[in-house]
Length: 297
Image 1 (tube, rainbow, N blue to C red):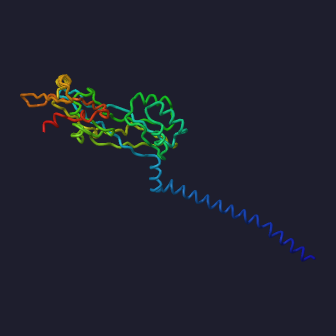
Image 2 (image 1 turned 120 degrees about the vertical axis):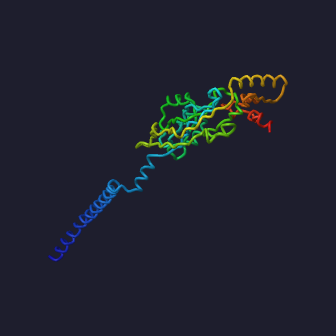
Image 3 (image 1 turned 180 degrees about the horizontal axis):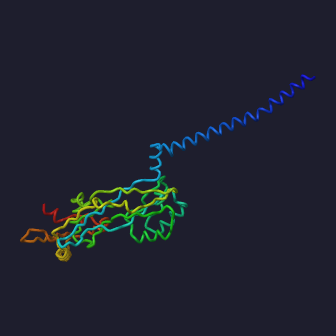
């Protein structure tokens, strides 16, 4: 009888030790995990693991290529026939757009971009996508009024031709990346374009892009100007005279060249129909031909 009581007490004592043993194991595991996390934190902060530093840098910095200011093309008197002006390119950070449907609706109603185009852009899992390159200042101001998260602007040079069609075929034009496509813009592209520069953009802790102007294009990356023998005043007279005679004879096209008889320099070179490099995408195939060059050889 006494033995049975003793066994019962012994079993109860053993059972009461089990919860303590389990709690000890859990406490030991928690301590081990705490030490492991603390050791890793010390490694990152004190030993400055190179790989971790690179990853951290990649998460907070990224590069985009900037267009340098392209050199001007001037007439013999120094007037700019082709020049670069400051424009604004619009970008988005899809990861920071709070309401994508609302974002698409507001942007598409404000500037000339379709819903489909914007949706495709912002659905990319990236922190930087171009929405519109070389936009007008009006577009920029209109979008700024919306105060949309994830929308930003960067200054870029835009190629313009102040005298519109004046010597248009001779000058040629550039594409959106400021690369010469036709005419003198193409022939002297490497001389005019200069060196492309890269802009390092930084992101804050929330992933928002921070644009810093001190990182803009350096002076030594700028393109060179070129000066022509073309006299814009004589070119204007030649253009008007050519247009008048082509229309009077009901002809499809025509060209004219004015040369300084003493120096042999070309003062005007006109081709009709005219080409306005500012709107080269709207021009016809005939208007893009430099007839004085094509017909002379």
